Length: 177
Image (cartoon, rainbow, N blue to C red; front, side, top):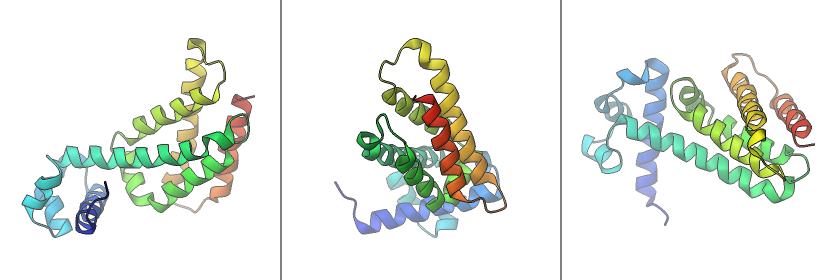
């Protein structure tokens, strides 16, 4: 069910406020008062959607992870046994579009763990005969791919995203051979 336009706008303002505040101070020091002041909304409105700042962060991380999952799943039939370049490119573009939010959540949140789990699940699906023995390799590849994306996002100078896409694709192709 689609949310009302006003609800989407309010939630977007709250996400932006969370992002701005996380750039200024550690998450543990952010309060609901800080967020509603930054977003210029009523405190009651905040509580209509979230229990507290931890719930807000959790839901924002889940939204990002679910969006990445949809991106990857939408290209899975195309990539089985082949290059994952399309899926990687769309994922990197999504992170680029949401750079500021992804950046602060990767630095000070659970997004890194959630993305690693997502990437590991995708790697397992790509292995035709997945066994328990593959767990170590899957963990290594998922963590490594996320590490490359995180390194790219954390750089102060501009790194060509095509280099990032090609590097991850190269690693994954070797893994799935």
